[in-house]
Image (tube, rainbow, N blue to C red):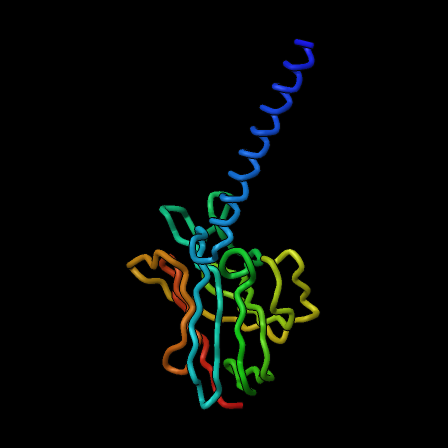
Length: 186
């Protein structure tokens, strides 16, 4: 009888431990599932450009003392490699009417934004599959266009990655890198 009692006590204590562990995991997941409490919180910007409503959404990583853009394994975003241009889900833009991004006419709708950073130029890609995690399922056959741009470099660091609309352009800033793409009437 005593052995049976000890077994049940042991079993109960294991159940309590499992319950406490599951509650802790649930609390942790509920905290990290809040997009604003993530290490790379979701940010957005919107504007009316040439009479067309535009909206961009992205997860905004921070520099946090890291090497961001460069050659080699020490960099968070290596030169010459596809990048989701942010963290978590791919950044995306939504336009409510037809516009021209630089010289490329695009239809109203949503597009994911990918980039291939390099020291002297970046390739900016608008892809028709806008709702995707990272660049894992990226398909170049769904590219709306690819645009080669020349980045600028600032003396001051932009701590959090930022997309925003200003001066009829889509602008990007992170670390010391800056670039802008003009938005035109089609």
